[in-house]
Length: 179
Image (tube, rainbow, N blue to C red; front, top):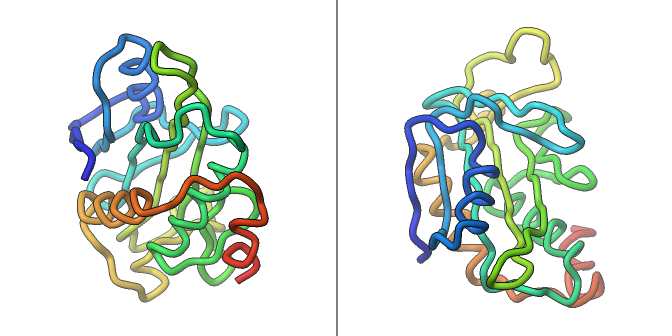
């Protein structure tokens, strides 16, 4: 199991992992109770709710210089959907009952080790109501699903991703994606 650093507060778990990689600091995964500048795709903000959400990012060191880097994001999305028993909406949203409960952000970071994929995962675990102005948002709790603590949710996802073979083409994940 990779090392997990748990932070009380950080600007963005994704940015923290990237900074560590660029400094040459060993990094496995970073989770935060609170993100003050969490980010999603296309520069959108990702809001976390302390104690009610998982905010984590990890360096996928096993996939350094991967042959099919775009497929890593799809694969991480599949692993997240399988971990939390959700549907996945192209390309990175975790959905239950037509509402978004989470999402992934993936990027390739060049550093001295090579081109390292960094994957961020945010999951609303135990929100009891949709945040103001976000009627499309939900949580595992609101959907009647088990609600692990954030650290337990991170461990469950990381254990699955570590067993994942690094895909070289869509053909290798197409059956899982279709399901």
